[in-house]
Image (cartoon, rainbow, N blue to C red; front, side, top):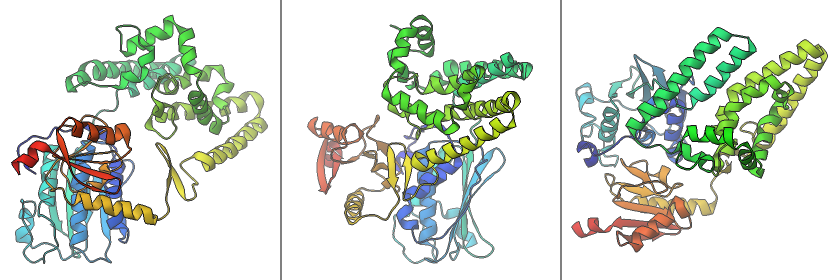
Length: 465
C-alpha cells in the first residue's frame, strides 16, 4: 500500500486475455473457492485488456476474498465480464447483506470497515489496494448493492488496441500466399502492406521506447557477428543455409514437427504450394535455437502454426476433392478425424482422464496427497509471517500463493530488493540459487524455515526494526 501511495510501482503492461486474467485469479483462490458455487459469465470473444497481469489478478483476488468473507458459506459467487465503452468491465457479486448506501463511497478507503458487519479478520487494506491497482492502470472501480441482496464490485480496464509485433510476420506471409495463389491478390497485397508497416512501427519504434526486449535471443545461434536482430537471422538464412539446416536436425524439433503435422494427417504437405503457409509456424518454433518452450506444443509459440495450418489443411482437402474425387476426399477426412482424436487422447488438451497437459508436462487433477497438504500448510505458515504491505520475491511455483501481497516478484527474472525472499530448496535458477546468493552476499538473513521452504528478510530492514 505504501508503494502504491508513493507511486513507486512500475507496471509491466501486456495485452492479456480476460479469461486468462479470471483464470489466474481463480487459481490463486482455488482452496477457498473449493466448496463455493461459482456463476461464471466471461465470454471468450472479449477484446484483450492492457494490464499488469500479476497486479490486476491481485486486485480481483481481493474482491473475491471480500465476497467470500461477507456472504453465507452456502451462497454462490458471481463473476461476469462484458464490454463497456472502450473498456472491459469485470464484476464480482455476492449474496451477502450488502452495504449501507451511505457507506458505498467509503468502502475503498484505507482501513475502512462497514459498521454493521462483525469482525471478519483482515487488515482492511484489500479493497483499498484493489482501487490503487485499478486506478494505476487508468481504470475505475466501484461497488453497488444488488436488488435481490448482496453487493457487486466492478472494475473497468482499458482495452488493448494492439497485438504482438510478431503477428505481423505471419500475416505478411499469409497475405503473400493470397497474392501469388491468385485467390485474393488485391486483398492480399493490402494485408501484406499493413502487416509489414505494423511490424516495423511496433518493433523498431514503439517497443524500443518501452524498454529492452529479449525475444530475438531465441535465435542467438543464427546471429551473424554484431547483428543480434531479425535482420541478422534472415541474413544467415540466405547466406548459410547448410548451417541453418544443421540447427533444424535435432530430436526435439523432429518430435515437434511430428506433433504438429500428425494430427492433420500431413495433409498440408500433399501440395507444394501449401508449404508457404507453414513458414510462420516454422520461423517461430523449429528455427529457434536453445529455447525449448518454442518447440513444445503446450506453450503459446505453437499458436503461430494454428491459423495457417488449419487453412492449409482445408485447402488440401478441397484439392483432393477437386483432383482425386469425393471418395478420396471422404477417406482423407475420416482419417484426419481418427488421427486427430488419437493424438489428442494421448497428449492433447482434450479428452484427458485424471490430468491435463501444461507447459512443462502433465498436471495431476486428483485431490492433494497428505504430503502435499503438509507442504501447503508449511508454506502458508511462512506467508503468514510476512506483513501484507511488504514486497516479496518468491520462487516460481510458490509465487501464486501470495495473493494478499501488493508486490510479488519472481526470483527467476530480475527482482528489486524485496523486503522478503521465500523460496523452495533445490529450485535452482527458479528460486533457490538467488536466495543462496543473497545470503552469501550478506544482503538477506534467514529468519524462518518450514520443511523445504526458506524465508529470508532483507538485512537493512531487520536493523531498522
